[in-house]
Length: 275
Image (tube, rainbow, N blue to C red):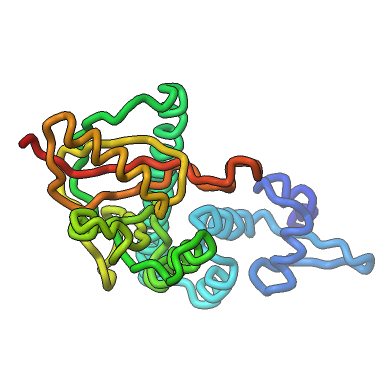
């Protein structure tokens, strides 16, 4: 008579639990060869290769439902199809995880910028070269106030989320050059979300060119135009001229602060050229 293996021994041999083998029995994936009068399950040594293969396929991330269907009519050709499908699923998951990793890196860059800026004790404006970016833009909901800034930004957020994971490259505001020159700073101004390199196409996408930017850290909301005025004053006194829209990048929003500092920590970025 063939020596049978108890459920505990079979489970231990494959690094499984007894509960897992009981479940495999219930879903008709891997059944014992004998169940005694007390309900104890026993397996044949000849079943070991089958359970080993089930464990292998499961370790690849193939669902138990797919494994059940596969073992009901298994062949090398069908396993090739199964493995190719799982390979494609894995490649898609790798791409998704790469995007998440990039989003984490982007958010880290923003927070590290904020921490470094705080250590600089808010020095005066400086020039920084910034590479080209793309952003989705929407004019502010009127009247312009903190609550409507949230509404404007979330309108953009929803539009992006329809197509992809919302990028973590940050958000902010854009103040139009023409409005600045006409001394009506907030005309046509609005919120923006910066897109990642892997982002899909969106309506109302604008390009922010590679340029030298006059930058200035500040605590304040984007409609506090005094900060823009201060930066413009510095630009003029240092022999530069404004050549494009000013970007107000939010580094830390008010969720990081207690009520007494209910202002965003931002960096104004104004594209400039020497006169």
